[in-house]
Image 1 (cartoon, rainbow, N blue to C red):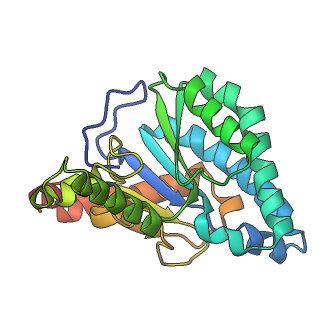
Image 2 (cartoon, one colour; image 1 turned 45 degrees about the horizontal axis):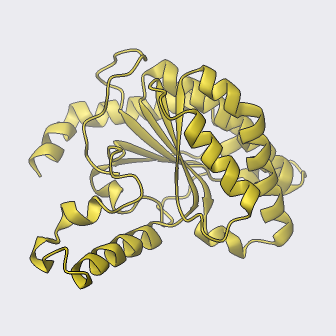
Length: 252
């Protein structure tokens, strides 16, 4: 992702709404534990929250929504839980892809696909191909994603170009590295939201978050809804108006 200009959208024009919102969807397990339910039910309810937030994002005029759906560190979780998460991904794409496409949502995937099961890769490819020409909202799914790994891969690509003699090392700067990240055509997030009260990025979009506003909310992800999103967007707007954030970012 880079600071590229965002394309026109069919959504409402609201100058105080961030063009790109990224969300660390945290708290499914804690939501379930607090109710005496299995973690799988927390993840299932988290998918319902995602559906609500995708709809709300378009209604608010957000043009890009990035979600942290599966971290490269999540492989350390119990195999049964990983199986549940992958099962939810399969069902979400199979059940929701048609409606996302009908609603004009473009799906983009960032993260490492090597080593994933064949049917998962096929579903991810299908989601991107089917929705490639949609313009209403871009849903960026960070799947099997880690920001350090993304930056390291970009550095490796640059190193190969130098080794091949196609790049002068003196041309390597922040723009060059940014252009080799997973989705350099997508603008950096204006606002990053993390649910469940934790206050850290957890290896999510660390390069792209250089000038993002961060909002941490105590609500567990399954309870996150349009009102919670509106509240975070309102906090973003207050900060932008108070500190002239957009001017400061463009001048930095």
